[in-house]
Length: 129
Image (cartoon, rainbow, N blue to C red):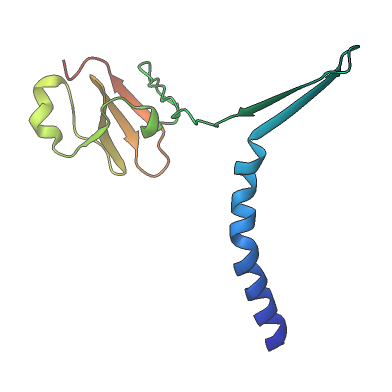
């Protein structure tokens, strides 16, 4: 059993860099064109194209039209933050959340969500203008 584990470890250490280098070699494409002319000349064209895979950053799409009953996803919320002191915003129509609910901010909107499930209970559009 020890011999098997040592052999597997040695193989993985040797094969690791080879496997990691394989995709880089696959990105280069070589093309060779050979033409024979009637006067005996041989024309050889060699073309090498190296492609680099540049990953574009994932584009985040923000939502601005939250509706009651939908699931709130904070990754889609613009300027997401939890409103811990709702009393400071009573003049902006925020009221006391029930047990298990919390106010969050998404852009200029105040959204009351259920903390456990993330379901939207109320939306106050433009509360943080």
